[in-house]
Image (cartoon, rainbow over all chains, first blue to last red):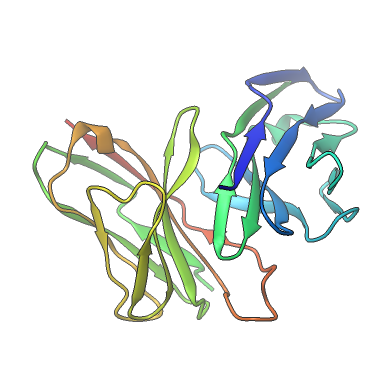
Length: 110
Length: 116
């Protein structure tokens, strides 16, 4: 079945540091890939998405590229802010179901 | 638009009690689903529905029932709560029509349930 594996957290960075959160997947067919963000006490919000190989999703300074050859969708941001502190989920959709990774807790210190 | 609305936000139950978690969406989405979120396990799909009158099991359906009598509402029922059902529950919805396969899912704010 489909599965998503994220790098283990938690991740703690200083403000303006570079962020990478790794995500790899296993799926049949050609899934769509997503990054969702969950701020404290809230539900999940879509951060960015990519629907086919080599697509790059981007939003709020975050970006991720759909790499079919390495089955990866790593999340990056060049300069994180304190307000980026949240839990980040990588997810894929193949057919109707959405499959999530375990989530990575990011804390950014001033 | 209200989006996806879940009630209640918090609930404490005793083992063996029953309750219903409510979920409503006002976006005319065909697809609705329930997830539970547990530490280190991400979100796991409990049940889902692709339209009124149609429901199916997800990854962890045991102990939960659902129904979909209208497009807007998708309640989740715990018939006899167990401590293992202590979790945060999220409802989500999205379009699910051919030609709109890549649409995003919208999530409610969650229900934090504790079973003692």
